[in-house]
Image 1 (cartoon, rainbow, N blue to C red):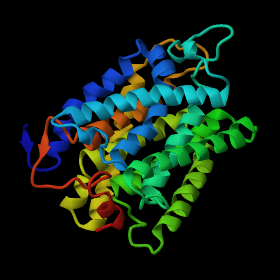
Image 2 (cartoon, one colour):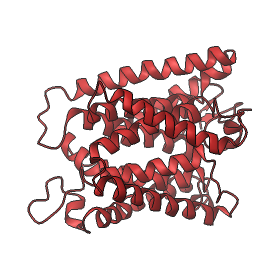
Image 3 (cartoon, rainbow, N blue to C red):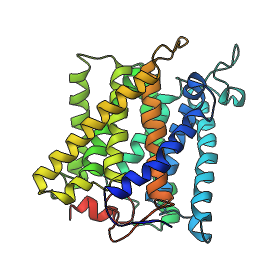
Length: 349
């Protein structure tokens, strides 16, 4: 196994794995529109299960197997769970319809999973991120991990379904606006708690409670402001890029600028890197879809959000937190993001 002793070399080497994996996720279902409409909901529904394996189960049950089998087992388990959870999402939104699961245009008598199930899927994923990062797993973190993970996942499904039924099905907001707010929420979850290792809440007493107010309040105010100048699909696309690049810096690069500079300068450098990479990613993805003719219900911004948040983001989590940077090895330096020393990151030590 190649041994790479420091950041950012390890993170840059990881792109050799992450980028092809992202392309594989995007192209697995076919062309751009098929990928967006079929793979988008499935991958998003699978994200909470992936988070459970990576940050609650610490790669169990794959760790019961020797050699490289754990990563493969956990990846296959996540893929299977993604399909099961998408079917469950169908049941909540409308009805179980296996034929519509893999058909971008299922026709009369069927209900496509895109975009109808996406607000539910994103809501469950956001709840899992909030519980894992912001609320620090309370109150189930102290349970045995074989119990704590499913309990967390079930609780987040309950929260996600309740929010969907109350807000979207109840008519308080439309699905696109709800999804855009969730995308803004993702930025407030990932950038402080992954990229900046829990700052500024790390040294606040009862930070799990203060963090919830900080993240939820910040997301709501931010969304109200950006909604004055942009429509929900554009907001979701830009925020999806910020979430993905926040994971690039926080997970793939191990928040590398923070260790190389004084605290204030390090945070500014990390934020500047996220901003620059987000602009670059958004521009590249939009350029890649330039001239593509989308059918009604889909757009270039939907495509950008899918590639960034539902393909690149999970690919980074798989590579770092599940595959443990395979085939590379980060020697002489701990992981400083979510996995392994997640508590150290959240404590701000």
